[in-house]
Every structure is written in structure tokens, then in C-alpha cells.
Image 1 (cartoon, one colour):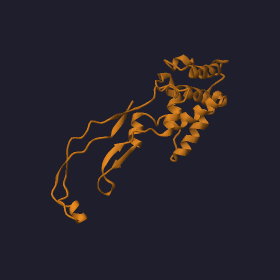
Image 2: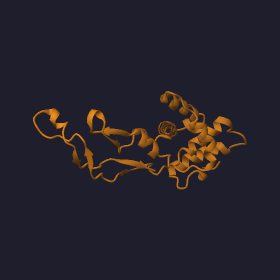
Image 3: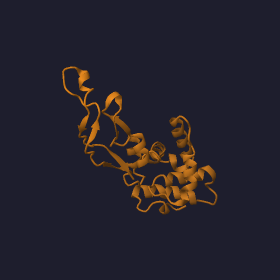
Image 4: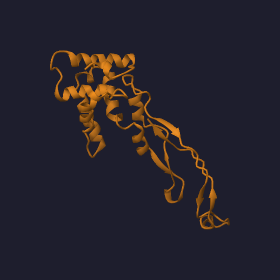
Length: 199
């Protein structure tokens, strides 16, 4: 397995790391086999935003590690990646394993749109769904690692503004707080400040 097949435009630091990993993969026939081989391939494949088809076995193995408690999933994925001989060679490689285990599969647009949604306004905590525009710290560690080439990952775009709506309990005035909630319906304008993530 040659590192250049896994990245179109690798950074110098990443290219150096992958060259080390490739030397292990190519040094002697059958040196890396089984889970150890898949582990090294997973590190390579999860360090790029465009893994080739050859990555399917290692990625399937990696993402098949799934427990009910997600912290157990992360720990087991770290253990799997640490099977690769180069995973503990330098502090940068150790940090890469941690970044991959915490961020891979969690920082794409679909995942961010599902996990960062919250509700604002409305009665009883029910209101407009809004997706946060700030990525979790683990995404920054993963996408910003010197050995990954993920092109910054998903981007946040603002949705078009909503023009008008209808609220059936428009207040009719008065000093009583209840009168502000019960009354004749009416139109209102709701500026849209929310957005969503795209890959």
C-alpha cells in the first residue's frame, strides 16, 4: 500500500507520516497482516477526506466497533488503531489516533446537523429548530491535525430567511400576563438566523 494512493494533495507533515507507515507496510512480505494491517490502513484512510475504494475493508472494521456506551466505542477504536506499529512512534501520531477516534464519522454534515440541533423560542421550550454554527472541539482536533488532509470538513451556511408566519395566540394587550398569550391570532415576521452544515 503506497501512501500517495490515499491523498491527492498531502501536506508535507502528513506525507512524512504516511511514508513512515508505508515503510512498515512494505518492509518484508507479510509483516503486517490481519487486524494490524487493517489498523494501519484505517489510520491512512481516515486521515483523508477522499479515501479510495481500497479503504473499504479497514473502514468497515473500524466503524463496526460500536458499543452502547459511546465512550466504550471510542476506547475500543483507539485500541484498534494502536495495533498499528507507527501509532505510538511520535507524539503527533499518538495525537492523530486520538483525533481520529474522537472525530472520524462524527464531523460530516449529516452528523453535525443531527447532533447540533437545538430549539429556541416558543412556549414550553418548543420552538424553532436551530443548528449550531460551531463545531465540537473534537472536530477541530481531527480536521486541524497536521497529519490529516480533510480540507476543513463540513461548512456552515445560513438558511434563507422566513418571511412570515401565523401565531394563533397573538396577544390583545392589557396588564394581565394571560392576556398576552390568549387572544386573536395574527401574522408575525421571523428573521432566520439559523443554518445547516454541508459537505
